[in-house]
Length: 226
Image (cartoon, rainbow, N blue to C red; front, side, top):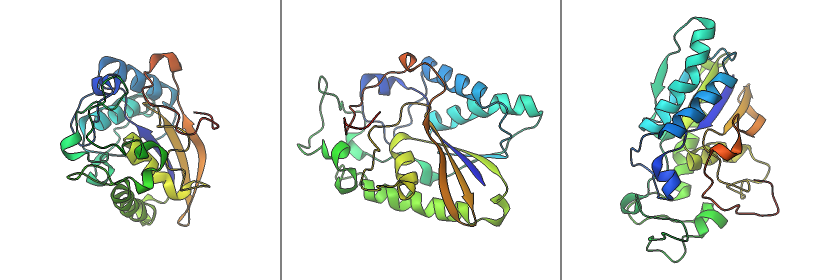
């Protein structure tokens, strides 16, 4: 099994520095362009299936990414949605500014989300990062043990925090949740699964010029490369 795990393209809330979470915010035109560029780079990958978060920014990203592969191989790629791939729910904090210049989150400990995410409790009516890790782990275990998927190449279209949660058990240091940085829009990770054992074979790859994407997130561990 070969898994291509991608974060969605850019949205207007990304550029504005607002918490998205479960809010169903669509891609902006730049986000669509990033997804198209990524899809062209992956056009020779013979995807068998796409599994996506049901949120429109993730689904549209995935559809744009697989379109060149569908054209190249002359076949339609089936798409399925899974609620467990949705982004961390911010509850009533969704839509609030999270940058220095627009900060509106009523929690003096919000910076823990970047510096010690696994112990960050989140919004009172939302999810903690630990909650997110639990649901993505359930998805992961179900996915990698499906007999019918063992020889498949699958695109998983999800979100930044959900991507890190999904892949957390694969990192050398799982306590370093962000691995130095929030994944950029349309970041791709490739994971190979054999006999229930998974290994990252390509980490945090982008296929576009970095100048095309806003980066509103600080490097949480400056000694590591973003």
